[in-house]
Image (cartoon, rainbow, N blue to C red; front, side):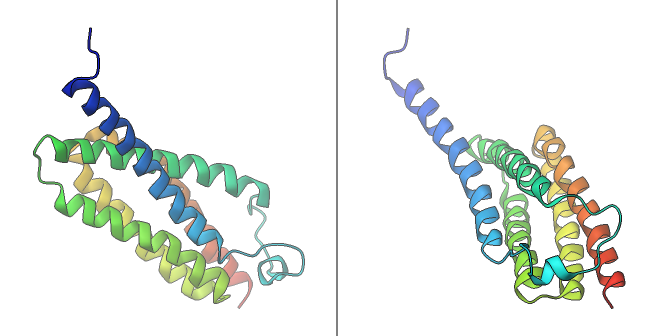
Length: 168
């Protein structure tokens, strides 16, 4: 039975890494939300919306789950780094897509631009896919955990496009 030796220190570090990865991804969500105004009378509220526009209350729980899955995915790749694998490119791509994730809210909501939002989300989609491709050779579960994220961003891109077209 272990009583605080090297093994338990590794467990603590592993748990802290997991928590840190999840918190980091959620902080990106918080950063993006600082630019997001959707209440009555807001620019977003005034936009013509497609019939498949989800209710506003759905976005917070969906994004919360997605940020947790992203954090776990990041954690799995970080654990591979601990094992000595070179994960420089996968982590760099993950970092870029995180920045692009927050940037979309700025482009769409803060700048009130469906066009800039559309461009931003398409670039984000490309970087999510590139991240998934590089994660696949490092940890397949990390890639699988990003599938819901790519699916949601794909839907959001279609929604963003519809908002752009409907509000020309």
